[in-house]
Length: 197
Image (tube, rainbow, N blue to C red; front, side, top):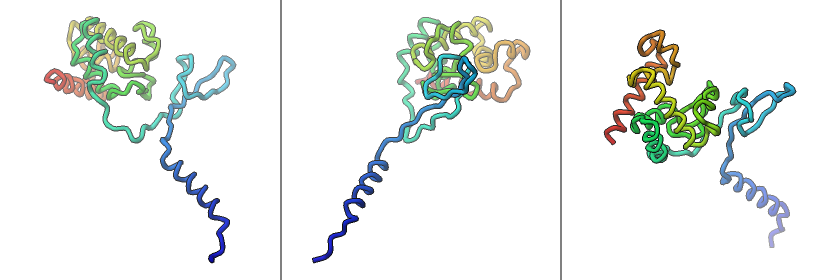
């Protein structure tokens, strides 16, 4: 009879722990850095109750497949009706701005599906930029105002959405900024695709 190996239960426990770690779904979260009222540097995984913060570590989503392009059609149609902005145009903006990711945060701090800057939240009636309904309604209102400002010229309104009204006013056209020109081109291309769909 072979001698009993006393290390066997320990090995089994280690193997079981490793197996659990291997199959566990990793959790991820953005980490935000901000200064509290006393000037202390603070870190949190929830957007802090102040507009003066920056994303310190951006969540990297693994194992995520392509996002559905029709997931927010209901909210987009409602915003289209309410603000009189073409549904395919709104959908194209969402596609180019966030690729339908409601938790998207840009390097400049724009948030949500339509990438609204914190300075515009109040004027657009947005309390939670990560709420798809609020973000889409606010973005549609912003686009409506830009279309009105530029006499319905979609390309100029899109350029202003990306680069700001003053920049477009100075250029009297889509400004010669590669990022803005690329943005307008991409949105127009998606707009045509969604018009046909």
